Each structure stands twice: as C-alpha cells, then as structure tokens.
Image (cartoon, rainbow, N blue to C red; front, side):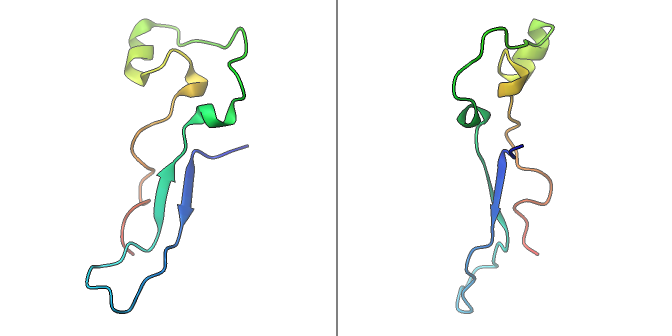
Length: 74
C-alpha cells in the first residue's frame, strides 16, 4: 500500500527569523504508482462525479489540499 502524501522534518536553524514549519508535506500523484492504465479500470458512475473529481477513474483521483495538520507550525 502506498500513501499519496509524504512528510519530512526540515532542519530548523536557531537563527531563522521566520517561525518554523516543523513538518512539511507534499503530494505525489497516483499515476506514479500505476505502471500503465489497465484495461477495464472502473469509472465514476456519473459524469457529474467525474467532473467534480477531475478524472474519469477513481484510482487516479488525488485531492489537492494536504491532509489536516500537514503544513502547520507546532
């Protein structure tokens, strides 16, 4: 199983004038984990759902914003 979100803790300098972001997150698109599009891949049941998701296939859907708490300063 894979996760679309990757987290890391950057170095925080004691001389940095800005408040630090202790944990950073970035998203990787799901097509990176799919070697090719297999035949017969299930599709969204209605065109409205597909338009709302931005893709015809649920396996290729990736929400844009990071999960809650991903980019906040602790």
